[in-house]
Image (cartoon, rainbow, N blue to C red; front, side, top):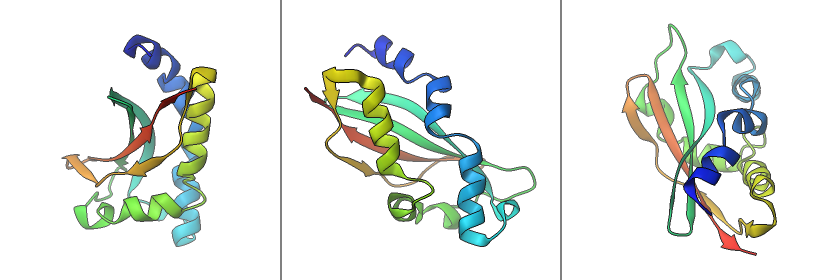
Length: 132
């Protein structure tokens, strides 16, 4: 699949439908009992395709007047992988649906948290692509 096709299929608009902004509030509501306790918003973004791996990002954007400290985000891949509100398995299933009949996504994994800046941390979502 060409990169230009992927950037169209995995547009910001389509990814926002898969992972709406409100999901971060739902996550913090479930975790802390109050969405206002959350230090970041979560956004799903397309990064690249490397070989047979589609790489997406769960971008953690610091909320105003909050601290996005490394110690808050380093353990998140394990939490996100299992948390029903984040629903990584569901995200992958929806991405597979966007890709149509040409590809399946038989497996996925979350990488380590990457600190891009003081206000942006990223958790890579690596999705294996197989031609159907």
